[in-house]
Image 1 (cartoon, rainbow, N blue to C red):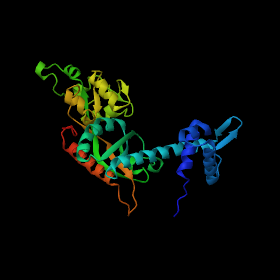
Image 2: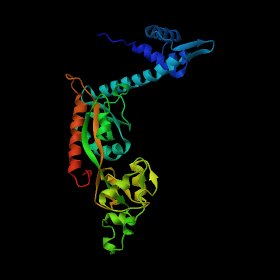
Image 3: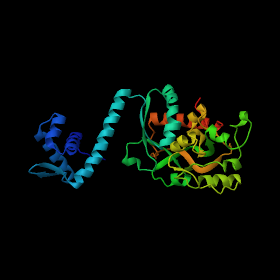
Image 4: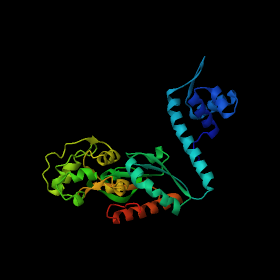
Length: 322
């Protein structure tokens, strides 16, 4: 079936004119005459059957429909240009992956492992943008998403297939200096882990997006903790990690997101008893037709990511980078 698409030249003229709100500046940018830009935009309006600009004595102004269309055209052209440059750079081999990802997982778990990907697949380039909520792949340039959520949230995401990578387990972590205050012990044993009862007596750091986190952990440990809801509230795991390393309290965190702090000794596991929640990490991709084949770069990335996740699951602290 023939596609209903305007010419890329007309779209380029429209995008430039919309950005500058000027045919003259668009012509200068594109090395065309003003009349050539005008003809291209008139042809585009006739093709669409919609007015994109209002002509005034002082120049042109975008119509409401033109302003909305300009946003979409800008995104399409930028994506086309990026994919073209990537194809030229890779000479048809490997290629780019446009990945949407939850920020802390991408920064603290994925990025430290990307040098391994580069060594195994030097022809694959991963571009990462932050996305925390489900979206429609058709409205974006993303090839895949790294998503943290519950099985129910993943099941409600339309038009995708989700590959489970690992469950999220949280443990209490804090600075060594704070843990040393938890209980009177010999100096050489001051930083050894303590029990849940001792954790209940320390200042707690709360995650605002999971206000019941500490209460759930103490309930699972069978410990009465009247102050389970008290303490500084922070939104992101990355904020909790910094606050905990500064001795402000005990944070409930997945060890895989604080690998560097644990390796440096800025944070230690205050109590080894973990709580597995109902959230997990998934690689989400658009659902393919029965006869469709995934792009080689995405297939290789998916296989590599699953191997990393298997290593993380088999590790005692959820996959410390070797």
